[in-house]
Length: 189
Picture 1 (cartoon, rainbow, N blue to C red):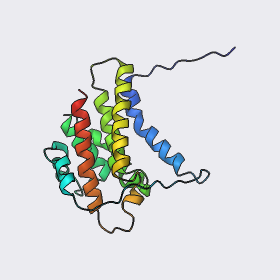
Picture 2: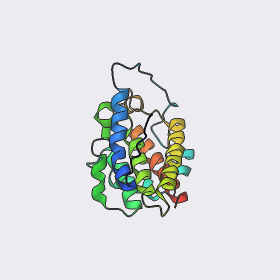
Picture 3: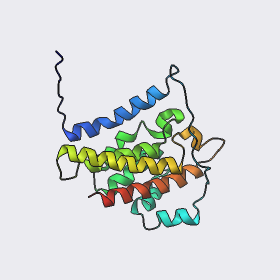
Picture 4: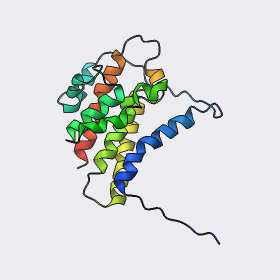
């Protein structure tokens, strides 16, 4: 007869560990033992289009990016710190994102993608609802962000920056991603 064990973990502890889960998933993906797929996103413009400007217009987080982007902060740190400021959380939590910049330091998952998921997790931890409902809400928000991302840009830094010497495309994606995260957070309070 099999016995099942149940592990209870506090929501905040679970959310704090999520960065390690992302790192593990990215490490597994980079394993030479697994076949490597290279999903392609849409063609990437380096400048905000008029449609893009409509998406970022009025976004506090997207505007705040200017205070951090390429001023000593990586893409992941920039994405997370503007979310922390938006959510009025301690800015020293930005250290959670320190290892995620530059696609986990290996041109893998984009730092704006990973910091967006971190921000969603931190936001879900503040929802005044039971743990299971908060986890479900977190997954729904993450799914919304993931779906938006895969329609907007490739997942990996190497594909986003492919052949580019500057970071203009990263700046554009960062502005769009922070605006999207803000809209997700606002509608899930």
